[in-house]
Length: 293
View (spheres, rainbow, N blue to C red):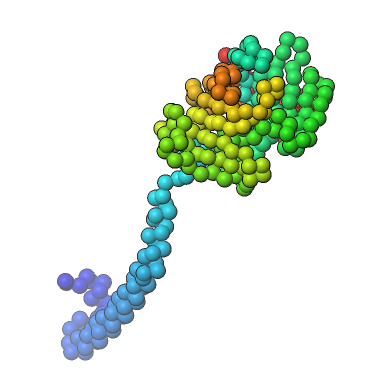
């Protein structure tokens, strides 16, 4: 290739006149030095390439690629499908109850990760509040505290645990085992499912997800006075956007194999921050969820 003028001026020193034996000799020496420099540079680059493409480097690159392309675990897929983490959620609902105290009821629930739970039932007189702060259950009529139960068998503890399970985020915490269910164990209407076991008390739950990886089914043991202890099965439907999350507005409950209640949400309010601990010790600090109509 014909050298560029800049190359020619570099290999032919000033004063050589571009001709003559002296100029040509100097140009030849400069060319040989340049060729040697380029050869050494090429050797260094080749050595570096050999290091980068060594078996160890290739294995590391293949592992990184495999990890990056590996499918997300089902739990992470489900959290992502609904729109992300759900630290706190407050729900205002109307429910048609079939057993125990049949009729139409209205209540509010509040849940904060990991297991803080509040349930307010609105009555014709004063509301009844049931609060769990992670260690004790408190009951209020209006603003008056009427009972405190720190026992492990307090019924509201099982409600809080069930709420933690269907929240999904709490299943990421230590002490919770999550494993996929076999295809022949899938609940009706689910395309994938998980088995959940808590190490502290051995309680077990099952979760079913649809083709969108949204949670549509859950089952586990719950205590419901005066009905006692039994398996609660829940179906979620009517998913709508609540802020940035896709959450169910309709819930159907079956207890011990018999219809228990149908719940229609009036409003679902996901919150980014945790509620203060006081919210689960005194009913006055439990937030409202604005009814959407």
